[in-house]
Amino acid sequence: MTHKLINMTVSFNNTTLVLASGSPRRQQFFKDMGFEVLIRLKEVEEFYPPSLKAKEIPLFLAKLKAQALVGSLAAHELLITSDTIVWNQGQALGKPKNVEQAIEMLSSMSEGSHEVFTAVCFHYQGKQTHCIQETKVTFSRLSLEEITFYVNHFKPFDKAGGYGIQEWIGLIGISAIKGNYNNVVGLPTELVYQELKKILGTPKLN
Image (cartoon, rainbow, N blue to C red; front, side, top):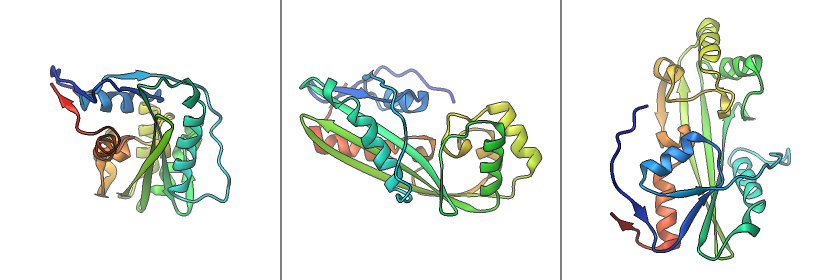
């Protein structure tokens, strides 16, 4: 993906946005929206109760990530945490641990539809809000050769469901998408922007 350099900034008065994500895709989205963000990371064991289903899972994990950093916030800082899962055939697919697991995930999604859920939590001056986006993605039939080729070349071990829609597998394998595209990449940008406006008011555009 090529990013054209444009000299612009989008800001909310004296509020500093703190992004708790090591994902280069999420970080790039904020840059592309014009935001300057502080990256603040803290290792969190990502577990959730097995009783949770679909969108409940990323919301639980986004809140869990926030709990680890809320205490570090200054009064002028707004914390943003998020999590994405793929929900396929009644199961949550997170990040694959190895080649075999990535191949298994993609094989299970071949010639079918699944949902991608992203939850984003916002903490500001002691208050918490959140938003959740759902996108339905349909794969055409993927051969084992195509799946293995993709996994070996792109190594999608940092991506929920073991694939990146913006990569080769998305170009040749996705036949339909219903909902927000950026959500599948990792962040529902429009929803995040609207939520920030609700919390902080009209942004300053330069």
